[in-house]
Each structure stands twice: as C-alpha cells, then as structure tokens.
Image 1: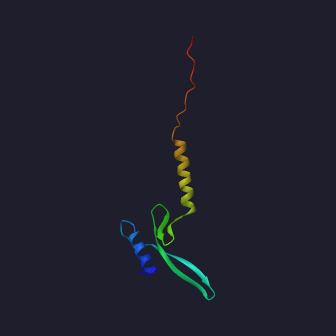
Image 2: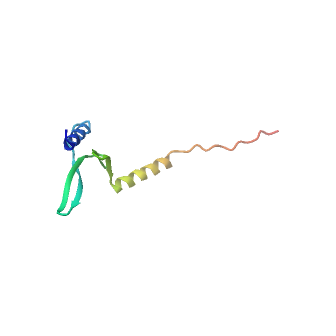
Image 3: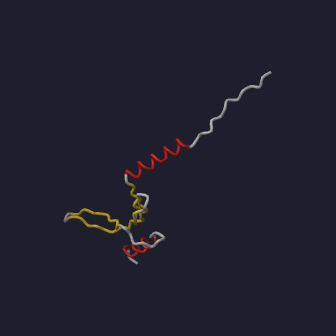
Length: 96
C-alpha cells in the first residue's frame, strides 16, 4: 500500500457516522521553481456548529470562524452570569 492509498483509507474510515461525502478536500500547497504542487492530505466536513473539521495525514484539523468563536465566548459569559454563585454567609459568634 503506497502513501496515497493509506491516506484515502484513513479518510474514508474517519467520515461522519451519517456516511456523507466530504464537503472539502484538504491540500498542502508546495511551492517549487515551476509553480505550485497541490498534494491532497485529507478531507473536511462542515458542521452545523460553524466548524469545519477533518482528519489529515498530519492529524485532526478544526477550522473555527471568528464569528463562531466570539458567539461561543459570549454564550459562556452569559451562562456564568446567569448561574447564581453560592455566597457563604459570614459566621457569627453565638451570643453569650
């Protein structure tokens, strides 16, 4: 099995459970004297949560839009503000 066959097999095994085809091909672009050589390194899927993710020969890659990241951070801040913190009451000494 050559390197390209292994890459194709790994990517096929990493497809989402739904078995849908990849939305994107991932390429590494290598510049040389005569131009560029595009080498396919994996496949990527677009998720409903604003991420694009997939497995490549170099490992897992996740792309997150800046808008999605900002929305996630805002949601975390709102959740922290809406969750009441339990404040401890100061202990008082019993009256004598």
